[in-house]
Length: 152
Image (cartoon, rainbow, N blue to C red; front, side):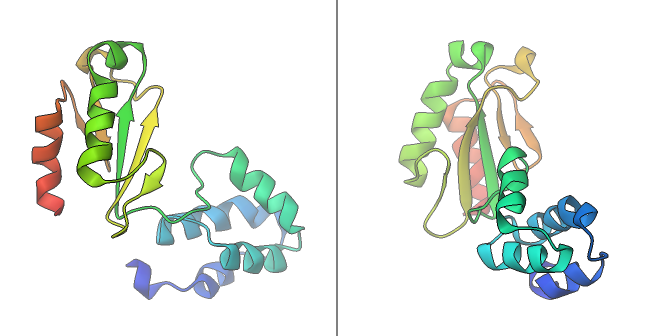
C-alpha cells in the first residue's frame, strides 16, 4: 500500500489498545509516512493509554524513528574513520552545496534527507554513501551526483 492509501486510523485499528502496542504502531506509522507526526503521536497515545511524554521518550530513544518529515529519498554519508580519511567529509560538504540542505535536514522539495552516520558497516568500500537501500562504495562527489540524477 502507498502512503496515501493508509490512514493513521487504519494503522491504529490493527493493534489492541495496550501499551505493549506502542512500538509496533510507531514503526508502522514511520514506515507509512517516513516520520511520526505530533498528530499521530497523540492518536497513538490515546489508543494505547500512555502519557505523551512516555511515547516521546520511546520515539527519541530509537534512531529508527523520526519526529520530523523525511525526504522521499534518504542519503547517508559515512564519516567513520576509514570513510573520513578517504573523503567522506568532502562528499557530505558537496551534497550540502548541491542539494542546498544542511546535514540532518530535508530539502525544501521534500525529495532528499541528508544525514551523516558513524558507520555503514562497509569500511572496505570506503568512502561509502547509502542512498535509500543502495550502497555506493568508493564514492566520489561525481559518482553520487550521477546516482542522484535519476531522482531529479
